[in-house]
Image (cartoon, rainbow, N blue to C red; front, side, top):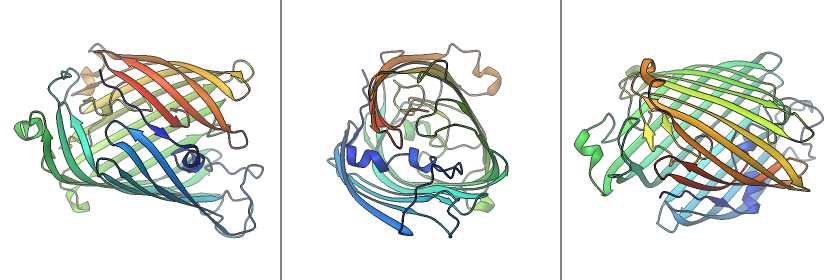
Amino acid sequence: MKITFKFSVFLLAIFCWRGPFLAYSQVNADSVVRSEKKIKLIPLPFAGYAPETRFLGGAVLVASMRIGNDTTVASSLAELNFTYTQNNQLITEAKWYLSLNQFYVVKGFVSFARFPDKYWGIGFDTPSDPVEYYNSSRWRLSLDALRMVLPKLYLGISYRMVNIQHISHHKGPQLLDSTRVTGFDGNFTSSIGPYVLYDSRDHLNNTKKGSYYSFQAVFSEKYLGSHFNFMRYEMDLRKFFNPYRKHVVALQFRTALTEGNTPFSIMPQIGSDEDMRGYYRGRYRDMTYYSMQAEYRLPVIKRIGIAVFGGMGNVGSHLSTLYQETPKFSYGAGLRFVLSEKQQIKLRIDYAIGMDNNRGLYALIGEAF
């Protein structure tokens, strides 16, 4: 049985998670964070636990600012995060969401991590055993520049860089070395391409109604510095309904396709705390992928709510065969605790069950989608 458990303490929860960096993508004068200071710095300690790291701790520095003097422009956020674990693992990350004016947004992150991971192989039917444990050092850079061309509609360009070095076997069978998959001994990829985003969600931390449609296509070429030539296409479609009072029906469909000489670390994967909950991230990977999930969220009393969810998805070697194989299923339920009513920040605790004895327990800030 594979259990995934993650926990962040309350102090970190308010400021340090993926939510805030999307929470300001819509210009709304009523929701703009106002401050007498042009830049507000907030240092915070944090602690947590995960089976891959055991106990972890660190600190985060959050900067809230407004670029320029136009008070109708949404505030910008930046975050610098340092984490160290009981297993002597190091993770550092910087994130930013910059509203340059009412039309232009620049967002992204850069991170370095040194920690072990798991590899089961490539394909929709890889067995749970054997599994290889391996170590690596990873640099990642994501940079998006967007311009609003119509209300709620943004067009822009995306850049992605991944540099994985010092891959070494830790324990278990040497699957990477024996199969010599693309990127088994390290890889550097540099990719660029168009980005289209439509976002009409009413509240990005606690959406009750609206839509989110994201389309990206990036190409990796040697003239960009990449070691491999490949294309990656991604689509993320979400729809939210408010059928009764504070009840929410949330639907999502995601798919990704890669073509060319794609490193195993870049391949679409099943399993995460966001979709196909219950599966370890990367439990299944291949050249194509899809997942769909539905979730029903409802309040119970005051700041406490519950949610039930289910999903299905799969990976495949070709788009033409992706939907022909029997999909993987997952389902589960969880609790919701509102930590900040003003910003609608929630702590979610989910327990999910997948196929083949896969399980997942998650304690995180923000909804899965």
